[in-house]
Amino acid sequence: MVQPISLLMAHFNVEHSAQVSREALAAAQQTGQGHEVVQESVRRTQMVQAGAAAAEVRKVQRRDEDEQRERRRDEGRDSFSRSARSAGGEEEGREEKGTASGSFDFYA
Image (tube, rainbow, N blue to C red; front, side, top):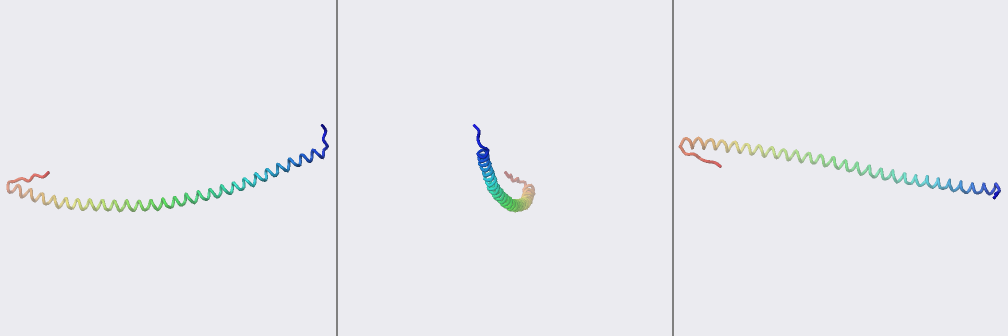
């Protein structure tokens, strides 16, 4: 079947305009999706930065707590060693007294 050239050109123009409008729509859709991706990326970055800042604060607090705990532990050791030295001095005095008198004190 032979079609006139004007009909073929009209058909071509319709197809071409439909393709161009689809491409424009696709480009607009990609641009919109691009904006959404950028917004999501910014949101994630802000969340990560906020989490990192909070983690840094927790890290500093944990370090301070560990230092305080270590100081208390050292103070406890010091007080225990002082009390052990003073108790040890008393035991030596008792032993000397016990051996001098001839009796023995047994400690468990």
